[in-house]
Length: 365
Image (cartoon, rainbow, N blue to C red; front, top):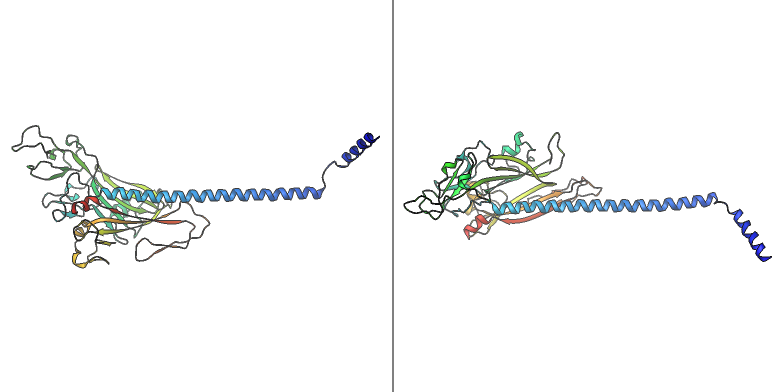
Protein backbone atom coordinates (compact mmCIF):
# COMPACT_ATOMS: atom_id res chain seq x y z
CA UNK A 1 0.00 0.00 0.00
CA UNK A 2 2.78 2.45 0.86
CA UNK A 3 4.49 1.87 -2.49
CA UNK A 4 1.28 2.56 -4.46
CA UNK A 5 0.60 5.69 -2.44
CA UNK A 6 4.08 7.06 -3.07
CA UNK A 7 3.78 6.42 -6.79
CA UNK A 8 0.46 8.26 -7.02
CA UNK A 9 1.93 11.17 -5.06
CA UNK A 10 4.85 11.44 -7.49
CA UNK A 11 2.54 11.36 -10.48
CA UNK A 12 0.42 14.14 -8.94
CA UNK A 13 3.43 16.37 -8.31
CA UNK A 14 4.77 15.81 -11.84
CA UNK A 15 1.44 16.71 -13.36
CA UNK A 16 1.38 19.97 -11.37
CA UNK A 17 4.91 21.12 -12.40
CA UNK A 18 4.62 21.47 -16.16
CA UNK A 19 6.39 24.97 -16.52
CA UNK A 20 7.52 28.15 -14.77
CA UNK A 21 5.51 31.14 -13.85
CA UNK A 22 5.84 34.54 -15.55
CA UNK A 23 7.44 35.96 -12.42
CA UNK A 24 10.09 33.24 -12.37
CA UNK A 25 10.75 33.78 -16.08
CA UNK A 26 11.20 37.55 -15.62
CA UNK A 27 13.54 37.02 -12.69
CA UNK A 28 15.68 34.57 -14.63
CA UNK A 29 15.82 36.88 -17.66
CA UNK A 30 16.77 39.80 -15.44
CA UNK A 31 19.55 37.84 -13.80
CA UNK A 32 20.80 36.68 -17.19
CA UNK A 33 20.77 40.20 -18.62
CA UNK A 34 22.60 41.52 -15.56
CA UNK A 35 25.29 38.86 -15.92
CA UNK A 36 25.55 39.53 -19.68
CA UNK A 37 26.02 43.26 -19.09
CA UNK A 38 28.75 42.48 -16.59
CA UNK A 39 30.52 40.24 -19.08
CA UNK A 40 30.23 42.86 -21.84
CA UNK A 41 31.60 45.56 -19.52
CA UNK A 42 34.49 43.29 -18.54
CA UNK A 43 35.34 42.47 -22.16
CA UNK A 44 35.10 46.15 -23.11
CA UNK A 45 37.39 47.15 -20.22
CA UNK A 46 39.93 44.47 -21.10
CA UNK A 47 39.83 45.46 -24.78
CA UNK A 48 40.28 49.15 -23.92
CA UNK A 49 43.15 48.38 -21.56
CA UNK A 50 44.81 46.22 -24.20
CA UNK A 51 44.42 49.00 -26.79
CA UNK A 52 45.89 51.63 -24.47
CA UNK A 53 48.75 49.30 -23.54
CA UNK A 54 49.51 48.67 -27.21
CA UNK A 55 49.38 52.42 -27.94
CA UNK A 56 51.72 53.15 -25.04
CA UNK A 57 54.08 50.40 -26.15
CA UNK A 58 54.16 51.74 -29.73
CA UNK A 59 54.68 55.28 -28.45
CA UNK A 60 57.62 54.23 -26.28
CA UNK A 61 59.08 52.17 -29.12
CA UNK A 62 58.82 55.11 -31.52
CA UNK A 63 60.49 57.45 -29.04
CA UNK A 64 63.32 55.05 -28.34
CA UNK A 65 63.82 54.30 -32.02
CA UNK A 66 63.96 57.99 -32.91
CA UNK A 67 66.51 58.56 -30.14
CA UNK A 68 68.53 55.59 -31.40
CA UNK A 69 68.58 56.97 -34.95
CA UNK A 70 69.96 60.28 -33.74
CA UNK A 71 72.53 58.56 -31.55
CA UNK A 72 73.80 56.48 -34.46
CA UNK A 73 73.89 59.38 -36.92
CA UNK A 74 75.45 62.00 -34.64
CA UNK A 75 78.12 59.53 -33.54
CA UNK A 76 79.19 59.31 -37.20
CA UNK A 77 79.01 63.05 -37.92
CA UNK A 78 82.30 64.32 -39.29
CA UNK A 79 83.54 60.87 -40.29
CA UNK A 80 85.74 61.73 -43.26
CA UNK A 81 87.48 58.43 -43.79
CA UNK A 82 90.92 58.40 -42.20
CA UNK A 83 91.34 62.15 -42.29
CA UNK A 84 90.73 64.76 -39.65
CA UNK A 85 93.06 67.75 -39.35
CA UNK A 86 91.91 68.71 -35.88
CA UNK A 87 90.99 72.17 -34.56
CA UNK A 88 92.81 75.32 -35.66
CA UNK A 89 93.97 73.56 -38.86
CA UNK A 90 90.96 73.25 -41.14
CA UNK A 91 88.42 75.88 -42.08
CA UNK A 92 84.87 74.59 -41.71
CA UNK A 93 82.20 75.55 -44.19
CA UNK A 94 78.39 75.49 -44.20
CA UNK A 95 77.36 74.28 -47.66
CA UNK A 96 73.72 74.30 -48.73
CA UNK A 97 72.05 71.12 -47.37
CA UNK A 98 69.87 70.98 -50.52
CA UNK A 99 72.47 69.14 -52.56
CA UNK A 100 71.30 67.24 -55.64
CA UNK A 101 72.68 65.72 -58.80
CA UNK A 102 73.33 69.20 -60.23
CA UNK A 103 75.38 70.55 -57.32
CA UNK A 104 78.85 71.64 -58.45
CA UNK A 105 81.78 70.00 -56.72
CA UNK A 106 82.97 73.38 -55.42
CA UNK A 107 79.69 73.81 -53.51
CA UNK A 108 80.23 70.79 -51.24
CA UNK A 109 82.62 72.71 -48.99
CA UNK A 110 85.82 70.66 -49.52
CA UNK A 111 89.06 72.34 -50.54
CA UNK A 112 92.77 71.59 -50.14
CA UNK A 113 93.58 75.30 -49.99
CA UNK A 114 93.32 75.66 -46.18
CA UNK A 115 92.21 72.79 -46.05
CA UNK A 116 88.45 73.29 -45.88
CA UNK A 117 85.66 70.82 -45.15
CA UNK A 118 81.95 70.99 -44.29
CA UNK A 119 80.96 71.26 -40.64
CA UNK A 120 79.89 67.82 -39.35
CA UNK A 121 76.85 69.21 -37.50
CA UNK A 122 74.64 72.13 -38.43
CA UNK A 123 71.23 72.97 -37.01
CA UNK A 124 68.34 75.29 -37.71
CA UNK A 125 66.84 76.77 -34.56
CA UNK A 126 63.10 77.18 -34.03
CA UNK A 127 61.82 79.99 -36.20
CA UNK A 128 64.86 80.05 -38.48
CA UNK A 129 64.49 79.95 -42.26
CA UNK A 130 64.68 76.28 -43.23
CA UNK A 131 66.35 75.02 -46.42
CA UNK A 132 64.10 75.20 -49.47
CA UNK A 133 64.35 71.46 -50.15
CA UNK A 134 62.42 70.69 -46.95
CA UNK A 135 60.42 73.88 -46.48
CA UNK A 136 59.43 74.68 -50.04
CA UNK A 137 56.82 73.18 -52.31
CA UNK A 138 59.45 71.04 -54.01
CA UNK A 139 59.91 68.92 -50.86
CA UNK A 140 57.89 66.14 -52.50
CA UNK A 141 57.03 64.09 -49.43
CA UNK A 142 55.61 66.89 -47.29
CA UNK A 143 57.50 69.98 -46.26
CA UNK A 144 58.79 70.72 -42.78
CA UNK A 145 56.48 72.08 -40.11
CA UNK A 146 56.69 75.88 -40.10
CA UNK A 147 58.89 77.19 -37.29
CA UNK A 148 60.25 73.75 -36.40
CA UNK A 149 63.89 72.79 -36.01
CA UNK A 150 66.11 70.75 -38.34
CA UNK A 151 69.46 68.99 -38.00
CA UNK A 152 72.04 68.46 -40.75
CA UNK A 153 74.68 65.71 -40.45
CA UNK A 154 77.58 65.51 -42.92
CA UNK A 155 80.05 62.67 -43.31
CA UNK A 156 81.13 59.97 -45.73
CA UNK A 157 79.69 56.47 -45.97
CA UNK A 158 81.11 53.85 -43.62
CA UNK A 159 81.98 51.56 -46.55
CA UNK A 160 84.65 52.65 -49.01
CA UNK A 161 84.74 51.89 -52.72
CA UNK A 162 87.74 50.92 -54.82
CA UNK A 163 88.92 53.96 -56.78
CA UNK A 164 88.68 51.95 -60.01
CA UNK A 165 84.97 51.36 -59.28
CA UNK A 166 84.10 55.02 -58.70
CA UNK A 167 81.05 56.14 -60.68
CA UNK A 168 81.27 59.32 -62.69
CA UNK A 169 79.05 62.07 -61.26
CA UNK A 170 79.06 60.70 -57.72
CA UNK A 171 80.89 62.79 -55.10
CA UNK A 172 83.68 60.86 -53.36
CA UNK A 173 86.36 61.73 -50.83
CA UNK A 174 89.78 60.11 -51.21
CA UNK A 175 92.32 60.32 -48.37
CA UNK A 176 96.05 59.99 -49.02
CA UNK A 177 98.22 57.68 -46.92
CA UNK A 178 101.36 58.73 -48.78
CA UNK A 179 103.44 61.57 -47.38
CA UNK A 180 104.74 62.59 -50.80
CA UNK A 181 101.30 62.99 -52.41
CA UNK A 182 100.72 66.61 -53.34
CA UNK A 183 97.36 66.81 -51.57
CA UNK A 184 96.10 65.26 -48.31
CA UNK A 185 92.74 64.48 -49.92
CA UNK A 186 90.79 64.74 -53.15
CA UNK A 187 87.06 65.47 -53.35
CA UNK A 188 85.68 65.02 -56.81
CA UNK A 189 82.98 63.58 -59.07
CA UNK A 190 85.53 62.56 -61.71
CA UNK A 191 87.05 59.06 -61.30
CA UNK A 192 90.25 60.09 -63.10
CA UNK A 193 91.04 62.49 -60.22
CA UNK A 194 91.45 59.70 -57.68
CA UNK A 195 95.21 59.06 -57.84
CA UNK A 196 96.20 59.32 -54.15
CA UNK A 197 98.28 56.43 -52.89
CA UNK A 198 98.66 54.17 -49.88
CA UNK A 199 101.70 54.06 -47.60
CA UNK A 200 103.57 51.73 -49.96
CA UNK A 201 104.45 54.70 -52.20
CA UNK A 202 108.10 55.61 -52.85
CA UNK A 203 110.01 58.72 -53.86
CA UNK A 204 110.42 58.79 -56.80
CA UNK A 205 107.09 56.97 -57.30
CA UNK A 206 107.21 53.58 -58.95
CA UNK A 207 104.60 51.66 -60.85
CA UNK A 208 102.46 49.42 -58.71
CA UNK A 209 101.80 51.78 -55.77
CA UNK A 210 98.40 51.05 -54.25
CA UNK A 211 95.66 53.58 -54.97
CA UNK A 212 93.60 54.14 -51.81
CA UNK A 213 89.82 53.66 -51.91
CA UNK A 214 87.24 56.45 -52.09
CA UNK A 215 84.33 57.25 -49.77
CA UNK A 216 80.88 58.38 -51.00
CA UNK A 217 79.76 61.67 -49.47
CA UNK A 218 76.61 61.65 -47.32
CA UNK A 219 74.46 64.56 -46.18
CA UNK A 220 71.28 64.01 -44.15
CA UNK A 221 68.80 66.63 -42.97
CA UNK A 222 66.35 65.58 -40.25
CA UNK A 223 63.11 67.51 -39.95
CA UNK A 224 59.48 67.28 -38.81
CA UNK A 225 56.59 66.89 -41.22
CA UNK A 226 52.88 67.18 -40.49
CA UNK A 227 52.12 63.94 -42.35
CA UNK A 228 53.65 60.53 -42.86
CA UNK A 229 51.84 59.94 -46.13
CA UNK A 230 51.38 63.38 -47.64
CA UNK A 231 49.47 62.38 -50.75
CA UNK A 232 46.23 64.31 -51.21
CA UNK A 233 45.41 66.15 -48.00
CA UNK A 234 47.85 64.00 -46.01
CA UNK A 235 47.15 61.60 -43.15
CA UNK A 236 47.77 64.17 -40.38
CA UNK A 237 50.34 61.99 -38.58
CA UNK A 238 53.33 64.06 -37.35
CA UNK A 239 56.46 62.30 -38.57
CA UNK A 240 60.22 62.56 -38.29
CA UNK A 241 61.64 62.55 -41.81
CA UNK A 242 65.06 62.76 -43.41
CA UNK A 243 66.28 64.21 -46.66
CA UNK A 244 69.27 62.18 -47.71
CA UNK A 245 71.86 62.90 -50.38
CA UNK A 246 74.15 60.02 -51.33
CA UNK A 247 75.43 58.52 -54.57
CA UNK A 248 74.41 61.67 -56.46
CA UNK A 249 70.73 61.21 -55.57
CA UNK A 250 68.50 63.03 -53.09
CA UNK A 251 65.37 61.57 -51.51
CA UNK A 252 62.97 62.27 -48.65
CA UNK A 253 61.62 59.40 -46.57
CA UNK A 254 59.69 59.03 -43.31
CA UNK A 255 61.53 57.56 -40.34
CA UNK A 256 59.37 57.60 -37.20
CA UNK A 257 55.68 58.45 -36.92
CA UNK A 258 54.25 60.32 -33.96
CA UNK A 259 57.23 62.68 -33.42
CA UNK A 260 55.38 65.95 -32.87
CA UNK A 261 58.19 68.26 -31.80
CA UNK A 262 61.96 68.14 -31.30
CA UNK A 263 64.54 70.45 -29.83
CA UNK A 264 68.32 70.42 -30.18
CA UNK A 265 70.79 72.06 -27.86
CA UNK A 266 74.42 72.02 -28.92
CA UNK A 267 77.39 71.51 -26.62
CA UNK A 268 80.29 73.72 -27.67
CA UNK A 269 83.91 73.10 -26.78
CA UNK A 270 85.28 76.63 -26.58
CA UNK A 271 88.43 75.70 -24.65
CA UNK A 272 89.68 73.03 -27.07
CA UNK A 273 89.78 70.08 -24.64
CA UNK A 274 87.07 68.00 -26.33
CA UNK A 275 84.42 68.48 -23.62
CA UNK A 276 81.40 70.78 -23.96
CA UNK A 277 81.85 74.02 -22.03
CA UNK A 278 78.32 75.31 -22.61
CA UNK A 279 75.13 74.46 -24.49
CA UNK A 280 73.49 76.75 -27.01
CA UNK A 281 70.18 76.46 -28.82
CA UNK A 282 71.60 78.39 -31.75
CA UNK A 283 75.35 78.41 -32.46
CA UNK A 284 74.54 80.44 -35.60
CA UNK A 285 73.63 83.46 -33.44
CA UNK A 286 75.90 86.47 -33.81
CA UNK A 287 76.26 86.87 -30.04
CA UNK A 288 76.79 84.33 -27.29
CA UNK A 289 73.70 82.70 -25.85
CA UNK A 290 73.04 82.19 -22.15
CA UNK A 291 75.75 80.14 -20.48
CA UNK A 292 78.43 80.63 -23.15
CA UNK A 293 81.24 83.11 -22.62
CA UNK A 294 81.08 86.06 -24.98
CA UNK A 295 84.86 86.22 -25.20
CA UNK A 296 85.05 82.76 -26.80
CA UNK A 297 82.01 83.17 -29.05
CA UNK A 298 82.45 83.87 -32.76
CA UNK A 299 80.21 86.07 -34.87
CA UNK A 300 80.96 83.68 -37.77
CA UNK A 301 78.48 80.78 -37.53
CA UNK A 302 80.79 78.21 -39.14
CA UNK A 303 83.39 78.79 -36.41
CA UNK A 304 80.82 78.00 -33.73
CA UNK A 305 79.46 74.94 -35.53
CA UNK A 306 82.96 73.47 -35.77
CA UNK A 307 83.13 73.60 -31.94
CA UNK A 308 80.02 71.43 -31.48
CA UNK A 309 81.12 68.26 -29.69
CA UNK A 310 77.76 67.14 -28.26
CA UNK A 311 74.06 67.39 -29.07
CA UNK A 312 71.27 67.34 -26.48
CA UNK A 313 68.12 65.94 -28.12
CA UNK A 314 64.56 66.22 -26.78
CA UNK A 315 61.64 64.61 -28.63
CA UNK A 316 57.92 65.00 -27.98
CA UNK A 317 56.18 61.84 -29.20
CA UNK A 318 52.41 61.38 -29.26
CA UNK A 319 50.37 58.19 -29.45
CA UNK A 320 49.02 56.86 -32.72
CA UNK A 321 45.32 57.20 -31.83
CA UNK A 322 43.23 59.51 -29.67
CA UNK A 323 41.77 58.22 -26.40
CA UNK A 324 39.10 59.49 -24.03
CA UNK A 325 41.73 60.52 -21.49
CA UNK A 326 42.35 64.19 -20.85
CA UNK A 327 45.90 65.53 -21.05
CA UNK A 328 46.54 69.15 -20.08
CA UNK A 329 50.08 68.67 -18.86
CA UNK A 330 53.00 70.79 -20.05
CA UNK A 331 56.20 69.31 -21.44
CA UNK A 332 59.75 70.56 -21.07
CA UNK A 333 61.93 70.15 -24.18
CA UNK A 334 64.64 72.49 -22.92
CA UNK A 335 63.30 75.66 -24.48
CA UNK A 336 62.55 78.83 -22.55
CA UNK A 337 58.85 77.94 -22.47
CA UNK A 338 57.21 74.61 -21.84
CA UNK A 339 54.77 73.08 -24.33
CA UNK A 340 51.17 72.68 -23.15
CA UNK A 341 49.26 69.71 -24.55
CA UNK A 342 46.17 70.72 -26.60
CA UNK A 343 44.00 68.17 -24.74
CA UNK A 344 43.03 66.44 -27.98
CA UNK A 345 42.94 62.92 -26.55
CA UNK A 346 46.47 62.00 -27.69
CA UNK A 347 48.89 60.93 -24.99
CA UNK A 348 52.41 62.36 -25.18
CA UNK A 349 55.86 61.57 -23.78
CA UNK A 350 59.23 63.32 -23.83
CA UNK A 351 62.38 61.41 -24.73
CA UNK A 352 65.77 63.04 -24.24
CA UNK A 353 69.38 62.02 -24.64
CA UNK A 354 72.82 63.60 -25.04
CA UNK A 355 75.09 62.33 -27.82
CA UNK A 356 78.77 63.11 -28.19
CA UNK A 357 80.34 63.83 -31.59
CA UNK A 358 83.48 61.67 -31.26
CA UNK A 359 84.94 62.57 -34.66
CA UNK A 360 85.16 66.18 -33.46
CA UNK A 361 85.72 65.76 -29.73
CA UNK A 362 88.28 62.95 -30.13
CA UNK A 363 90.69 65.08 -32.15
CA UNK A 364 90.69 67.70 -29.36
CA UNK A 365 91.41 65.48 -26.40
